[in-house]
Length: 177
Image 1 (tube, one colour):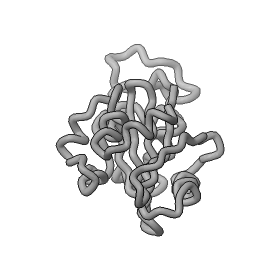
Image 2 (cartoon, one colour; image 1 turned 60 degrees about the vertical axis):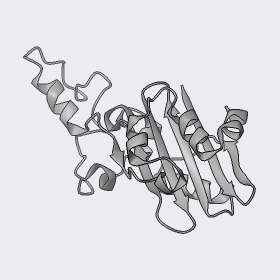
Image 3 (cartoon, helix red, strand yellow; image 1 turned 180 degrees about the vertical axis):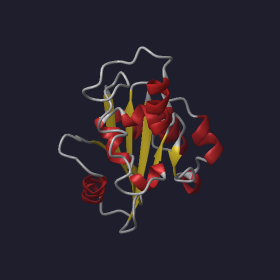
């Protein structure tokens, strides 16, 4: 199960709105959605998948979006996570992912290939494609009260609530949950 919300910083504090990501196919679409949701300077898109991963996209005016994803491998198996995992974020050259993410089944085998009965080399290769570590801008929320150390220490299960609490937006986020 997914949850996605927009938090927009206003003169009066934070405003929250839940958001549907069904029509969002690219990071550009997500950025446009954030900019349309508020005329304010800072908008945060918060996305989580039950206890698996969470992501934060920060849009400040017309600047490029800043992204943080707690677990790249878990997010890579999610259609919403794949939107956030750009080549740049993963440290790849555009187009390097020919066989990495798109051709992997959830069980780690490539399309059309039977599961290997050897010592698990295929699974290791699939796991090496995207690591289970956090990726992105670890200082994405530092100026808002969530340091890199605090961000890295968050548990996927309650990360968005913890972030909202640190921002002083816990109540408004809970209204859209």
